[in-house]
Image (cartoon, helix red, strand yellow):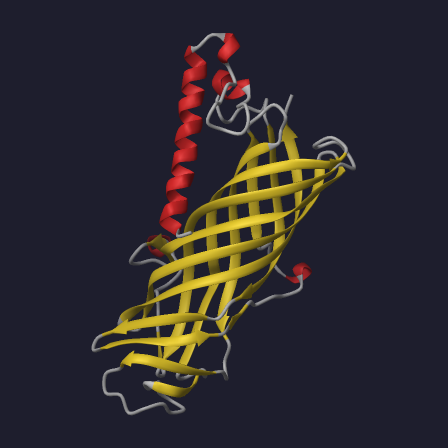
Length: 303
């Protein structure tokens, strides 16, 4: 399933919720909460007090990710050159959680009175580094190609990716900012009660925002200084909006003692990126990753 199709699904879902809320606000009380196109009844606080009402159950969390990447092709377009480095191996820059800032942030609210269905804004702050020392095949065309060497890429199967020929990093990071539809199913106890245990599932899509640094054929790429006038953009900025991320997440939520909970999930993520800046050009990459996520959260609001 491609990203454009999932974006259409997400947009249609949000539009459906908006239309139902609008209809509830003008209908009689017996029709409030009826959502024939959704698998749940929207809670009455949405129409009465709006989305940000604390009558709903809200939550927020911080946590850490351990991420694994599938090998991926990286296409490079530069003046006179258009080539692909095939099946590049990349890895996460994992450090002990106590020695670093959190990798993920979640904030969300439940949409129904049963508190099973919700919507969430999520940020995953991952890092991607091409593994040095691997050998890769390069296809396409390279200007002034003299073949693979220890200092320069060349079309052919014997390119050693080192700190001079090809070093490619999305640090600080490979960020996925997504809107997710959330489903919670109680397995032990009632939802949100102390010592309750629930299945949690999420599906969503959003933006891929990266801070790139790379060296190709001995030439570093620079995106400028990290300053207020150069923070974020599509074609400029220290962080670049380069594409979309789409993912599915599933796992468990355990309410340790209300309102504190612990969440352990696994997330499959597809990130489609283009216009990643390199020296005098840009890179394109489609990346599949698998995240193991642990987070500590706090529930608030709710009647």
